[in-house]
Length: 160
Image (cartoon, rainbow, N blue to C red; front, side, top):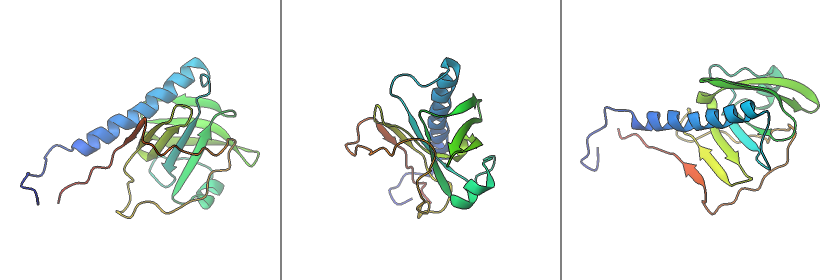
């Protein structure tokens, strides 16, 4: 309480994080309803592999013990979306895999075709996530534009 403002008894940061994660669900739900991605849209979705509710093959957990980024572009199947999570089929090194990812595990969502990006607070310590290798599922590596256009970064610091 260094600036004289009282600590909030309303968890605004958590409410905003939850609302922004719902954007991911709404976008994925639209893709599922319409049977595919429109135009050049494609998504990079980063998530915590150890979060409760995440269900991915053990070989992926071993390779990405903390965080993983998947690409939804050309080859994905069985996209199912509900209010709490989504599941999708993807291929990693030509091995088909089903991933179940709750929105609470998502730490990033990027659609490079329109330079739209959402970043969420990591659920771990203040130093942030450990570095990780890029996912090897089908999709090119995007080079993000660093001009800040269409980027929403949410990083609330709770006053102690």
